[in-house]
Image (cartoon, rainbow, N blue to C red):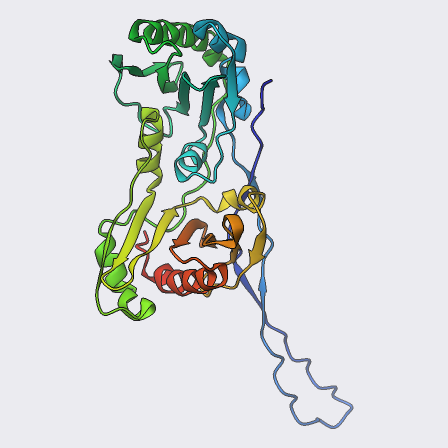
Length: 336
């Protein structure tokens, strides 16, 4: 059964409005009274502006690639699975107006990861004949939309994968021209982190974690996914860093996606939310891991999304560590 994609509202970070109260002039018929104390300045957050994130095919995978078509190319049932924006790569694609669609065969021996992106927001790459290595990776452009993917058929045969790709691209060519132009949301203020070790030094992470020494390094990216997902991740400026202390081992992982504060409503639906105060952020909450272990802190600051995943068994300790790390990293993040 097709699963239409959910729509999300972009959350624009609240701006600060200062309301200054004026002093009334004294009446000319009355004796002037001593000046009153100045009215305190009230700091309020303006309401967020609900700007819509538009997607190709209106975010509906079955409209772009009917499940029956995938089933026919495989010779057995194909199941469409939801691509959650809780994954930074999926969020990057959707932030650029794109669509991520994943199928699996019923016995999980076949799979297809397909990404559609408007070429107006992401330049198409790796065009040409499919590259096969058991699975087949492909990339093509039709009517201003870039379709890329990785396909593995249940029989594991490369010729079958190539035939499935031809069927998918032929179908896509007939539906793509009807798609309207999409407008991706405005980017956030952060830019990609060029050196994780330098970022952590700027944030004085040794003092934050109370460790005598440690190192920062780039985190792992997604594997075996469509070329479009990699390109969108770079285009958005997603950063992934990890910290390893010489005493205490791995401490945490950090992911930052510029301009992706709009994912907040969807992330709140991922599990039990514990509202958390983080200095420098407009909003933050902690999601506990299975069995109350570890978990992750989701932070939304200046229109950007940051995730801190601490390597701590107890969820309360994990939350406290994640807050300390986030409060040190937010002002240290490189910005445009």
